[in-house]
Image 1 (cartoon, rainbow, N blue to C red):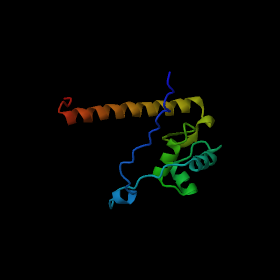
Image 2 (image 1 turned 90 degrees about the vertical axis):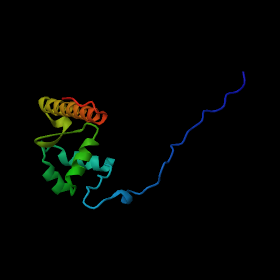
Image 3 (image 1 turned 120 degrees about the horizontal axis):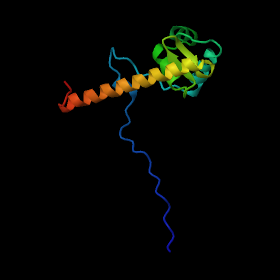
Image 4 (image 1 turned 30 degrees about the vertical axis):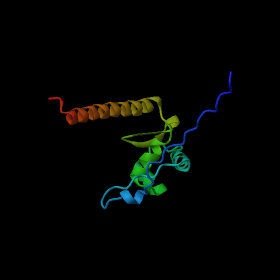
Length: 129
């Protein structure tokens, strides 16, 4: 049996090298920078043993805007929950609060899926009555 060729390693195709500045329009919200591990660490340290903390307090203390607070919480890999009361460390929240946060997020996901399905139906011309 002849020797096999080594597997071909494919490099990602770079379609365009366009800088973010080329897409910025006056009056449009700017994209949130991708949260990095250091931001997540800072948020987790700040929330430690504080219970529920409002976004306003986090913004003032850490110098972030509200979109950044949300993005960093989302990047926490489940370590930070959010809700009407603000943000809290998952491991320091009672089970009922964690379950409430999970249920709320799943409900939002269902609502967004339904809305996206409705939008696609309208686009295809088969809108629901």
